[in-house]
Length: 320
Ligand code: SF4
Ligand code: MG
Image (cartoon, rainbow, N blue to C red; front, top):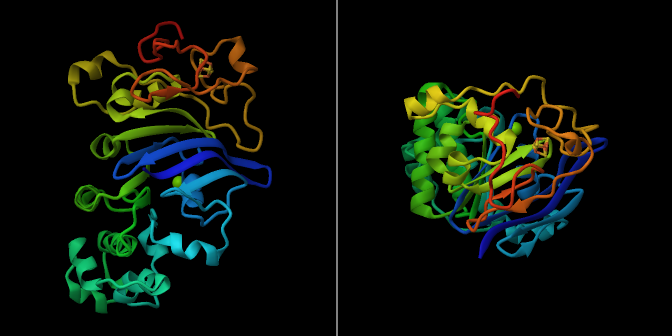
């Protein structure tokens, strides 16, 4: 069974087409990283999945149940299947509550039993921290508190939206390790929203690449990092450090130039054509369909990628 099925998800804010037809599945217990530049719609996808936003179109199914348009009350029995951890722990923890009340809050809302002290221990905090106020804690400790709160209801799916990017670099690795250990031990599925590609390589089973409200490529992590097919994915990866120094020297970073175009009036055809180094005429008018190019579920939306996955590599091609 899939922990999450998102079908043709659309989220428009007035004229802003933040998410425009995203289809994504997460198997029970697996980690899917959602990557892309800021402004690509990643966080909006996450907020639709936990139903902080009601989608404009499409379907969100949690553990098989369609929650797309449920009311607050109707959502209650489904709440325990999914939790979210936000980027900024300071902003997401109510300063008027004690840590214990914050971590235990989901249990009260869901009328379930659970143990706050155990939840704190699990994220590496002493149970006495329950008495404290969140502003007495460090950023890393606060993020541990958010994680404890998110996991106390034993969700089947965790949405982690840039969970370490607001933290000091010195504590980022520890929080990332904690998330990886918890995911392995508790076995929840995870949508890991990030622009940190080294974290993706460490944590994710699969990778989905988002550009201007749409997925351009998705597949197993090793496939995406090893043989990325979409020019945008190739460009993203070209800017990331690779462990092999020889491979590093053979690579040149691909500069994408201009900023992400506006989501109010996205480019016709392939939305990436205004920045794609290998765009052809067709790209400016015809929308590329997402196609499966491998037996491992590798999918890509680019006119120039062949059915066997071969196509341009903007990292090595000359004269582009
Ligand atoms: Fe580039 Fe065209 Fe492929 Fe879009 S469809 S990524 S513009 S080559
Ligand atoms: Mg974001």
